[in-house]
Length: 337
Ligand SMILES: Cc1cc2nc3c(=O)[nH]c(=O)nc-3n(C[C@H](O)[C@H](O)[C@H](O)COP(=O)(O)OP(=O)(O)OC[C@H]3O[C@@H](n4cnc5c(N)ncnc54)[C@H](O)[C@@H]3O)c2cc1C
Image (cartoon, rainbow, N blue to C red):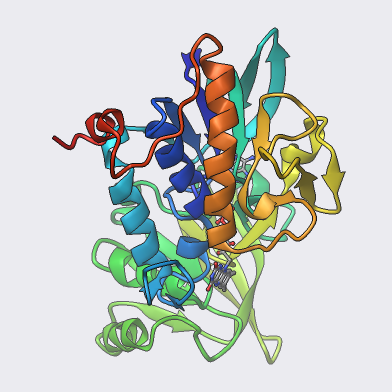
């Protein structure tokens, strides 16, 4: 059981800035995200696109904003738990207990839900037989590329993930890149590198075609694909990597007894508390009259919610409003002299 002052669900821009606002008030937080990295929508949906409405930053990409937010919270040495989905929230007297898909348990007087549009999850292959191979010889992300060394790998998809991994894994394995269209959506530079490898016979590209079936027993031995002209081809395959994009699932959040308004959590805009004391919702996932789904709104929301978190985590201390420019305590917390 991991004890802390605040459990933050979601490592998007709002969850990251929550760490800062809690940290300068002397509160410890942990951050849990279903993804394998921080940044939420900024990193998953538009890492290279410029954002123009972050105060005092005239222009920065989704990736740059994420890096800056991570740099800003470095002094607080926060523990991040990635690749874990928060499934269960239960009450234990004044505390909340959170359980994740990896069966980790966290306990704290406060939970801050910064879950955006829900947890990002890979779009799965629609084949019935796919499930039994998942995590063994069928993968939707690459965690450890070493397990793919020397294997026959079929990579499905037309976006950046499919292209990047086709290029990378072709250095250590025999890769076939398969896409349902002739055109790829991924970066043209990566595609031209891949085409060069194809010309040299170091990688195969199959388009336009779709996966028809997966064959094998304990693990995959072959796949069957179908071309537009209905011709089938069987390809010897040890590993299937599928990159058909991400879907967002509110999932378990709807089961925690919180008042919802359509797909968002209703909050009190004075402190962003939900109908459950000690559970707050901030960023895209919360709703109140006049809510704007903007990063800067989320930043404001965590500033106010963190004050209420302080009151619950330190019931015997008085909350004192302080400016970062002037407060010695905040300077110490930030590691400034
Ligand atoms: C294409 C595009 C362009 C945009 N441009 C702008 C712009 O110019 N300016 C602007 O202000 N906003 C912009 N936005 C909106 C902005 O990205 C969002 O307002 C912002 O990302 C919300 O941040 P968040 O931290 O609330 O949620 P998200 O960024 O959605 O992060 C939520 C995180 O929570 C995780 N999560 C959810 N549920 C769980 C669970 N149960 N367990 C574990 N983890 C969970 C998710 O995996 C995700 O990583 C844009 C959005 C898009 C799609």
